[in-house]
Length: 118
Image (cartoon, rainbow, N blue to C red; front, side, top):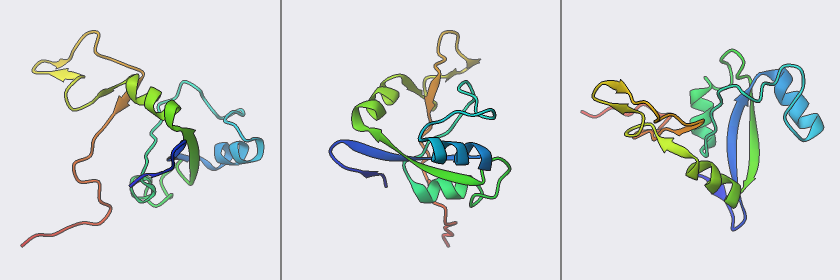
């Protein structure tokens, strides 16, 4: 459930309050608490981001930013990534040379609502 048009897509990212406030004020990421080398997660589904961030109550995930990326930029991120389901692990664990800065994870059931069957 991504929001997109012909030129852009919106992704969501959780941050601590101070980082989000800096980004909002300056229109870019940075500031004393931001690390360009930190692991980060972006999601195209706002509800899924809210669920995974504990409804913006988890430590250092108190603010959710909507970030508009160009479609070309988003596709470049995907091209530079690998699929966590099949590329990173073989029968003996992590495989040499199979690591990338960008990993995508496909959630089979990315529903924030628990479903019971019976």
